[in-house]
Amino acid sequence: MSQTVASIAPIETQEAVPKASARLWWVSIAHCVVDFFSYIIIPLVTVLQASAHFTEKDDAILLGLGSISSGLIQPLVALWSDKHDTRWLGTAGAAVAAVAMCLIGYVDNLWMLLLLQGIGSAGVGAFHPVAAAAVGHLSGARRARGVAMFYSAGMLGAIGAGFIMPQYATHLGLRPVAWLIIPGLLVCIGLAWAVHGVPHKHAGAHHEHAALPLAVRRRRWVDIGLLYASNVVRFMVNMMLVQLLIRWSEARALSDHAATALTPEIRHDASEINGPLQAAMSIGMLIAGVCVGLFVKPRMEKPLLITMPMLGALSIAAFPWATADSPGTGIPFALCILAGIGYAGVVPITISMAQRLLPHRTSLASGLMMGGAWSIAALGPALAQQLYLRAGLSQSFMAVGGLLLVAVVLGALVRHPDSPASNTPTTG
Image 1 (cartoon, one colour):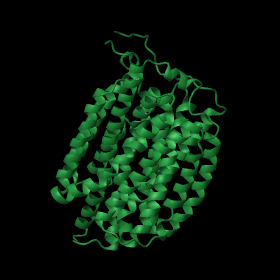
Image 2 (image 1 turned 120 degrees about the vertical axis):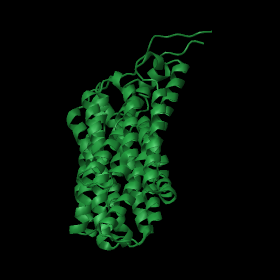
Image 3 (image 1 turned 135 degrees about the vertical axis):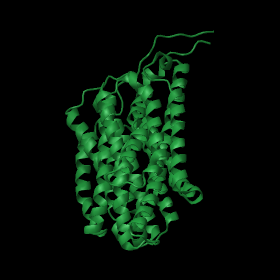
Image 4 (image 1 turned 90 degrees about the horizontal axis):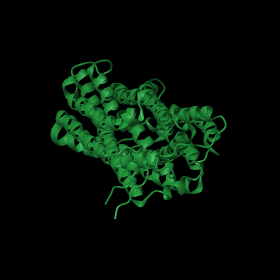
């Protein structure tokens, strides 16, 4: 038998929300702050090695734990939030992140630092799917633009942490980081106003999704799986680069001092090299996010899933040949920007596409595209460290660039949610 139906496009109709624009801006500001907290540890890893007494192998565990904690909790929070139509877990998560991440100056051993990293990252994870789903609803028909704005705000927070925290630790110390808890909690109050009471989905979303033919619903879940797998690759590359740049910054600082061992002074210098490079990747993410929001039309989304990872792969593979230049202003910085564009520029597109594929499960769609993928990316730092130990920095960068090409293949297989192929069952 054969079955045909008219093309059924994802529904974008939304109930009117009072002061939707102001709420959208405030959720984006909260994302900026939450992601600032989530990136506090990364530029300070080398400094924390001395204060918390752990090794290079341990920092891979520390960074990986952040991805696991943030990633695993997101689908769980998303399912709970969708089922009970509540956003309280997102606000509570943001508050937990503010407190936990800002107490790193009071730890004197690895286990205490791992505890704060685990708790704080779980808070960061709880915030993201709830906030992203609220943004999708507040944005109405301009969902892709709203998600891109939200995403870009998070990148601003990460950029700020990369530039600010090394200087903060050098001039004020680690313990005064706790002062940042106060503004963090104030932002949570505004977040509560912005998202509480905003429904997760338009009226009738479950009924309309259930009315789709079974073949269409199955195909949409296949596409969700492909988008998820492609984001796993992207985030894996992200975390592997984080680890490799830490090692590269330490090697650069040792070379600048003509030394063979990391002293406290050299560690701070390495941190000041590492921070801007990590921030540069976030600058790339920000540039891509802004461009996606302003210029990308639905028909452009699928081609970008293919072309942008190619740009990232080339930039990452080229990094070893840029090591003689100034890390803060030269080719390494520029390549990190291009890498950020390449591996993360299409993430807002994947979130928007996933929400349109599953309009009745927008928190779950967001959680899978972000946290569900981040949980697997937790393997990235440890894999990168093993690559570094076995093959050296140059070969490691090239291998990571090659890994990003897998996302190209997965992107090519995804059917766009607005295409007839995604909304009409195949004939058989």
